[in-house]
Every structure is written in structure tokens, then in C-alpha cells.
Image (cartoon, rainbow, N blue to C red; front, side, top):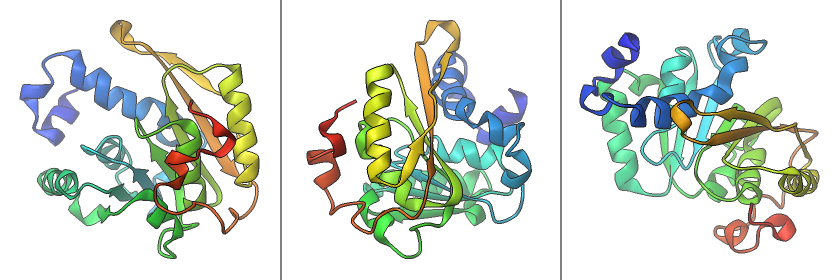
Length: 220
């Protein structure tokens, strides 16, 4: 806790659990394999590339940048004022050299040659239904990379729909991992998506289409 307090200099926000559990812990618990597990060596090597789609106020991207001190982070959001706030925080935290901000829609990032197929880890938290997020993230993945779908409630029907959507994107969905947040703050799930091959060129579709017409017709 002391380490994070010093790094973030946000003591007025961390007196209670809203910040530590609702933001930091909830951002980082799905990254256990990259923090201390089988993938930790790669994640702590220079050149490990992470993208946070729909970063909003900077979570989970800024938390990941602190937790993985050698990683390069690309934070994507279409709202310029949010990214300006994130830019100021990154500078205050001494992270500016490792963080690239892209003010654009996720569909544009997924079609940009500088982003498509580039990242070893792609994340999106509290952004959109699972079908939409999968279409945003999978095109960004390098071979042998992983996308993390942060979800709240999740069931077998949701999982089956996601598997069908991933098949369209030439990816596979791993078994959901569940966690009860401390202090009764609800259940969370994370699902790992991994590419089976290059994502078809048709995806992501044009800006706005994934949200209006989700793959599989789902809204989970």
C-alpha cells in the first residue's frame, strides 16, 4: 500500500476501499499470470506491449504501467479531455516515456497498421458488451498474445456466445476465471482470448457498427 501511495500521490482518494478495491485491485487481479506467474518473465522484458482500449480515467492502463515497469502501454480513448487528464497523471507518475495515448475509436486502432497485430496483451474494462469488446481487442493481438475481457456476472450461455464470436474472429475463449472482490464488492470474471490465426481483415468493422450490430447478436 505504501508503494502505491507514494507512486500515485493520491492520498485523498485512498482512505477507503473505493479506490484500492474498486480501481487498483479490480484492474490488476486478472493480470496474476503476468505479475508472478508463467508469463511474468515476458511481461518484465523490454518491449512488452500492452494496449488498454477505452481507458477512460486511466484504469486499468496506468495501474498496469506501474505493476509492469518495463512494459510499453498504449491507451486508447475517443474522448480527448479524458486522455489529457490521463496524460497529466502519467507525467506526474513518471510514466510518460512508456505511455502512448491514441485519441480515436477502437475500430480505427484495430485497422491501423501501427496497432493491428502488435500487442502481447490487450485489455478493456467497463467498456462495452463482451461481443463488442472481443471485436475491438482480437485484431490488436500479436501471435501467441492474450486479450483480457473484464466482466462482472457471467454464465454458461454468455460463454457459449463468446466462443461462437471468437470463432468468427479466428480466436478462442478460455474458461472464465471468477473472483469475489473483497469487502463484498461483487463478483468479477475474466476471460482470456487468444488468437488461432490472423484476425480476418473484415474486423473490426467500421466505427459504430460493432456496438450497433454485435457479432452473434449478443449483448452480454
